[in-house]
Image (cartoon, rainbow, N blue to C red; front, side, top):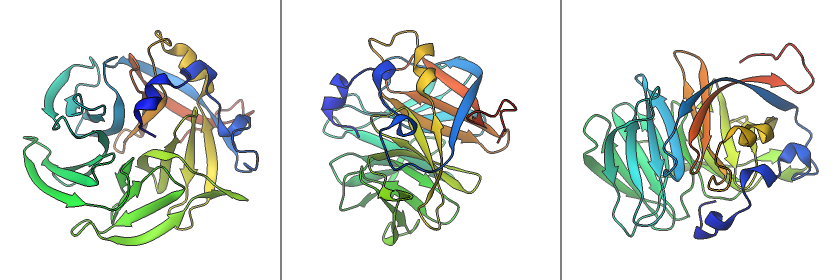
Length: 266
């Protein structure tokens, strides 16, 4: 969720997780994590969308008057290129298809299409809901709007071709936010929690929860840091990155089943 109220949300250290009771009907396996490496991240970035491509990160940030699209050097956190959104737009998630970056806005119900090299605006599209997160699964853009429903969009027309309600056993999982397509699954931040849902795109079933509760303790400025948000996957290097709004760090992590000392890797 990306309302201005999130600025006043409880800091990461006190956020709940679906694995720890936020979703009492949760029945999917719980995955823990191991930090492989920490990287610098702009602590002034209200992270909304994150992706990795061509050796660099692309990030979208929110807040009225401060929203932007960025190209970032992973190792240093340096912003290599930036495109600022109009002041009346609240930036949301981003996704890539080919040489195009698609960026959502929160309540403007308008998305922007940019050239990935120049950040030149090359198109716009409309949608009928709030915009939260977006990813590309190789066939469609998949969009979240803060509810439990994911919308699959035709990549040429941006018309909705499929709707999918995400559930963990007995109940819908709402507040779906930032999305990332990872080896056939959709990973989704659940706003206001420290958990990521692993979702089967064919059925909407949650196959697992990644519990990142302890990760917030590794953020050096919890008084400023806001909620966990931002997932990027390096398909060539099989690396998973996560961060949060106003976090001074971005983390590369590996996933393992809770209670499994062998830390089953992706």
